[in-house]
Image (cartoon, rainbow, N blue to C red):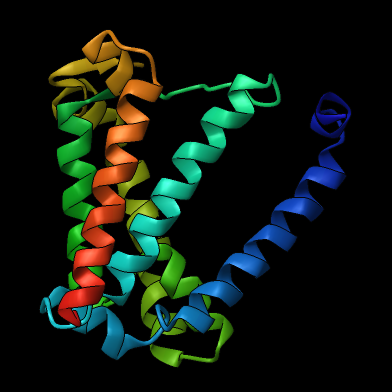
Length: 185
């Protein structure tokens, strides 16, 4: 079934659009598209976004490996390096700090009619992507490949079964979520 779906680009695009709309709707309903919530997170006063992202991380981590286990999914980790992680984190962090939205919450905010996300966010992403693509050849020869670690995953690094990482991480994140909730954060 999934191999048939994989070969049909139109269905994939439609399914991607539908999932994106549902994701944006859920972000909006969860309050993650509100500027005040995002700024509250950056000021460590409102942990709505952390709760949403950690819940998604646990759900995704377990779901992907369950699907992989029954043969319905394959993992294709992208190669990485410490240089690319640092540069990507800096670009993301600066944009997030200046505008108060990450790409997902910004798209959701545009969908709910936030003009700051539309004009500042979309314009900023397009300008930033253009500048990065112009600078990419120079960055690739320099800092982006520093500390190259390839397609390494945590289970491979630790030389354990993936569930040996997933279960403790899921338990730890769940405990953290309960603690955040009990603390009233």
